Structures are given as C-alpha cells and as structure tokens.
Amino acid sequence: MIQKPDSPAFAFFMTLSSPSPFVELRRVTFGYGERVILDDVSLSVPRGKVTALMGASGGGKTTILRLIGGQYRAQSGQVLFDGQDVTPMNRQQIYAARRRMGMLFQFGALFADMNVFDNVAFPLREHTDLPEALIRDIVLMKLNAVGLRGARDLLPSEVSGGMARRVALARAIALDPELVMYDEPFAGLDPISLGTAARLIRQLNDSMGLTSIIVSHDLEQTFAIADHVIILANGKIAAEGSPDAVRNSTDPLVHQYVNALPDGPVHFHYPGVTVGEDFGLATQATPQPGVVR
Ligand SMILES: Nc1ncnc2c1ncn2[C@@H]1O[C@H](COP(=O)(O)OP(=O)(O)OP(=O)(O)O)[C@@H](O)[C@H]1O
Ligand SMILES: [Mg+2]
Image (tube, rainbow, N blue to C red; front, side, top):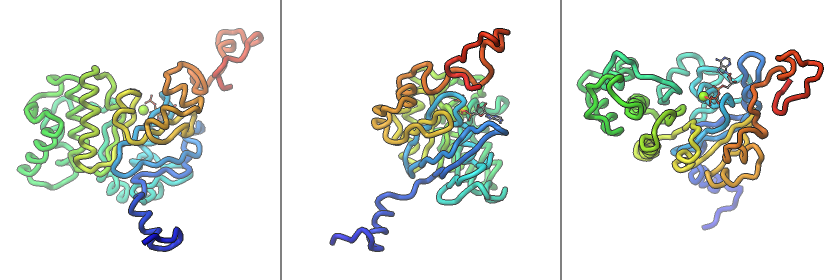
C-alpha cells in the first residue's frame, strides 16, 4: 500500500529508511579567543558509516573532534551526539557521552614505559571495575582485531610506527565505543602500512557496527574507504557528500583541495601583516595575495 507523504506511517517509514545522523553540528560557531575558527558550521556524520573530515591545516578539524568530545564548548549552535546536545552538558553527562566514544589522538603516543598489552588495558583499568581475567580477554581480542595479539609483550620502542598506530587503534576501541574518531591515523606511515591501517579502520567500522570519523590529509586512501566526505575550508563547509560527488565538485575551494593546489581560496599564508611591513617596506608595500590584514 502506498502511504501519503504527510501520513504518520510515511513519517515512520522515512525514519527507518534514513536514520538520524549519529553526530550532527547545527550552525556551530567557535573560536579560540577572538579568532573565529568555525563560522556557522553545519554537518552530519551518518550512523554506521565512515566519514572523512578533510581540509587545509589549521582549518579546525581537530577542533571539531574536540567539540564532539565535549572538550570545548561551541559558542553558538548545537553539537548533537546521538541526538543529545553536548554543549550544555555537565561534567558527569560529558563523561557518560565520552565513554561511548573512542579517540585516536593526533600525535597521540603510547605510554612508553608500558608494554603493548598494558597500553590497550589502560582505558579498561581506568574506566571499569572489570576483573583482570576479563580485561585480559578483552585486550587480546582487541589486539587480535588489529593483528597484534602476538606483540602483546613488546614495548612501544620495540614496534614500528605502523604497528604503534595499530596498538593505538586497539586502545581506542578497548571500551567498545559506538563512535571512533581518528585524528590523522595515517601520518608518517609508508604506503603499505597506510593501506593496512585504512582497511583496518573500514573493517572495524563494519564488523563492530561503529560510526567512524577520520581526519586525514591522505586524499587517495581516505576517499577509498570513506562513505561520506566533508571538506572544511576557511571556517565553512566547502563540500559534503559521497567521495565521488566531492571529487567532482566545481567549488573553487574543493577543487584546490582535491587537486592539491598550493594557493587558491585557501591561503598559503597565516593571516598577518604584509611582507612589506615586516621587512620595513611599508610605504611601497603592495598587498600580498592571500594575506588578510
Ligand atoms: N588550544 C588552542 N588555543 C588557541 N588556538 C588554537 C588552539 N587549538 C587550535 N588553535 C588554532 O585553531 C585553528 C584550528 O586548529 P585545529 O587544530 O583544529 O586545525 P586542524 O584542521 O586540525 O589542523 P591540522 O591539519 O594541522 O591538524 C588553528 O589556527 C590553531 O592555531
Ligand atoms: Mg589537527
């Protein structure tokens, strides 16, 4: 039977066929001090999917992850995590929400004086009262998922960069999060380790029924594994959609980013005074392209 578009049954059907986003930013504005980093930004992270958050360095990608994790509060707008706005939450509510998130931090190192096993066990010992026998089983299961069950006794100094990243990944999923946020999981990896890490993120997302957000500068690998791509530029969302739709975007900002062009709507220079003023040539100074005064 065909339902009328305004009937309750139709609305219910639509809810089932297009579930609400797991994370959503609605008209979020945020700055550290005076400088606006995110200017009226709205975006969606679909449930159960891998979403890539990309854009030039300093654009605010890590900042978005911090807002989702409740580490910083939006100055206006809403940051919805599974339908709940984290912005007005108290500390206890934030911790409860964060317990459902796993995070692989940018530059996030392993604890150097703990072996691989203890690194992965750390969040379990810190946040749960589980008996040690159960912690052992969980840690070994997580290490197995990243192919490093056999490396449990090694120290971080004894594993390669790619392996260390996989240990950090196992640690990020130790508490069985529903959302995992990876900040630059591929930085510094050789092409083989990078491919392995990318496939692993995809595979964990699907087998554990996660929702994943990857911040990455690696266009090729990220576009290959993502279902949804968001490009952030100059404090705004320049593009959001499927990898193909974003790749074919005619927006100049997106074109610059996807084709790795050094200058364009996204400026090479951090805002500041002109070169002329800095080098004592203020009177003859001509404005530099890309320099905001
Ligand atoms: N704690 C902070 N205090 C003040 N300014 C900050 C702070 N953290 C970040 N910023 C500024 O906010 C802007 C966005 O930073 P953010 O780390 O979110 O960028 P990003 O997109 O993650 O960049 P990258 O790709 O280099 O990691 C940058 O200009 C940065 O200088
Ligand atoms: Mg960053």
